[in-house]
Image (tube, one colour):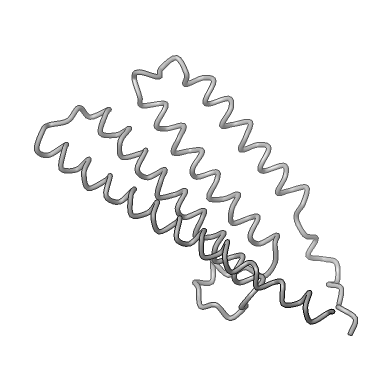
Length: 161
């Protein structure tokens, strides 16, 4: 029975691959959108503020793709293969590592969305409400990270065999 339950960890392969494929899709679409914005700006002399909003929207998709990539790699590394070759900053030893990496990327996405609202003249009335909402969300994430962080001074528990 223990062996069967231990094998269920491989069920994470499907969502891990799905997250990585979603990440690649968003990164490709965001990159294509940036190229299209560049072409539009050069050939048709696009309005600067519209260009800024379009580029930030594309960057937002790329950052969301990054979140999915971190999730995909992290889940795979946690449940399937700890020897996955990723950069040191992307290595995930436990769920707390994955959580802190995700919080960092989510804060970057919040900042990009806020800047997009800030420079969009059609949404000038929304700047204060978006700013307050973004600030509250970032503060909440910071409090969550602080409240749930590991205490590195405590000795780690060892598993009984």
